[in-house]
Image (cartoon, rainbow, N blue to C red):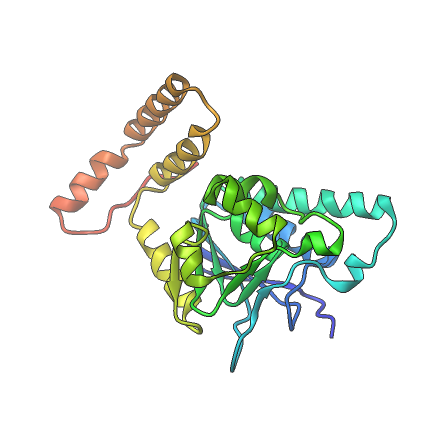
Amino acid sequence: MEYEQQVTLTQDGVVATLTLRNPPRHEWSEAMLEQFHSHIVALGRDARCRCLIITSTEPGEGRGWFSAGLSPEVLAVQDPLKGANLGRLFSQAFSALRRFPGVTFAAITGDAHNEGVAVALNCDFRVCADTARFQFTAGSEGRLAYGGASQLLPRLIGESRAKRMMLLEETVNAQEALKLGLVDDVAEAGSVVNHTLNWAERVLRQSPRASRAAKQLIEHARMRPLETGFAAERDWLAQIIDSGDPAEAQKALEENRIPNWSNQD
């Protein structure tokens, strides 16, 4: 059954959730990519949105899927131009996710293959179900996985283990993924989204400007010379002090209340 809305948005204050809805395996289609990109861009312009969770409908009894990669109709495409367009769609959608100014989480409710792993790799944090398994099978399909996985995976788990996953198609279970650093935490199946929301609440204790600065500085650390990074950190510190957030934090502590942070823009 093809769902008209293959990505749905729910928003509770400063936390937004995008849910992949292309059952039973939540595979990526062109429609899903376009909807996903549209939501990401809109949320990125919303200064109220501080945290974004990417998930899929949770399974009932037994094992389910977070995302199994490309949909069969996309895999069947033989036209090079259509293939290039698919690459463009993945690039714009997942690049928008990486550039999202708030903190992003993948709540991985079930198994993830290929592009299902890739979307999680493009998030800041990953929380998976204790039943989840991760695998790249794109090579056996005669292709590469879309979505930047070949670049992000080795940065996260190392070159050797990334080769084992991509070239030998090794399956990694939840506990092994945690040890490797592929995921940041494991939760009981059925409670992954709630567990991820608890992580998001920890982000919300911080100044929006400070958390945005820290995220950007950490990400740029692997690309910038050290002294350039120090200079960028000093620039952010000056902006943060000028915003009044440190003084507000101290005042809120003295008055035993929640800080009223400055606007994050």
